[in-house]
Length: 514
Image (cartoon, rainbow, N blue to C red; front, side, top):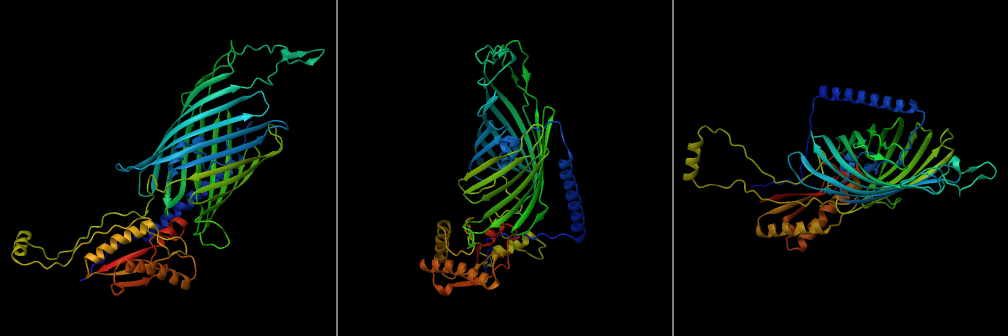
């Protein structure tokens, strides 16, 4: 009598060849359309382009589209800094800091949300301009509308303080025809205040499509300054209302392999009569913990490039690791009517805390759940008569269910065969079960990802199974009751096309026999 309990869920998706061909045709059309949008971005021009807050928008969701906050799956603190020369003596600096906190709950297709707090400041070292400080609060909610599609909605409130820098403010009234400019003369302007405090309401929507447990393509739209607050600095003037600001962002993964992927991105912004078109390309390269040539854990190196219709070109480099992300961007402004030829620099730091836990689980993401086993009963003609006969005859137990729960973190790093504390806690429970059932034996099966040689994967899969066996033996389970097997990368749970999927395939499974 054998009971087999497979504690990892294997999903097999079968589709007809006709359906596959239709999907491929649709994907080709989408790619052609996206490339057309990119070409349009290079061709559109305007009289005066609006400078974006930051060139690297990968983490500046509060400044572009708050609905994109739902892409975060663990608590983080973000810091972003920009230094941009406007003229030979005038520099514009911007600092952005934010924290994002996921909330995990489940109600129908709603599986959590993101709360974010942020602070933004921009200033000029010497210029008759307005220095701005902003505090922001946003909440984003994601809804899984299909098995592979996630829709996010967000509301945001920004609190502003704008201070007019009058230090170098001059007017024609301060010009002396004999002495020239005289700052001691009155400016002729009656400033009723040099400070303005107001708030704005913003909203955003973001739709993304999941494929192979990662974002494949996305589109987002956001509107800022919904309430259009009024600003007035001088007496006798007319209050001006802030116009709405619009953002549209589109991205599509055109190339996806196990260790590298390419994502073009298109960003359009409109403010007053000004608009800016950004077209960029991200190249993500996977890193692995056991690579002897790189001192990194499992993660990504991102190389990016971007061109804007304000005659600027930028290149960036970022490293994303389990506990942090760091990046740098250099943007060069070519000589134009509104910019001198110069470069600006951006720095990005993201600190990650806690465990990754997606607010909305991606399609096909591995999750543990109760396993219910049903056994087929043939030739049932009269249920009542069958039940009566069963009451009269002694029952022979053919299937005795055993309930086991595998901790989700019970997996291994690349080329690793050590047990973490949660794995040991689970194995302690498993050892207690085996002690209570002395007739039960266990087969331990080790698995790897597809990185490495077949011989190397065979050895590491056996090592993973053996380290579990050794731990059970140390807890008093006889070695004659344990069988060790290594299946290398022959039975993956997920496609080996990303570091996340590979980490899920590096695992052990159990078969209990009684």
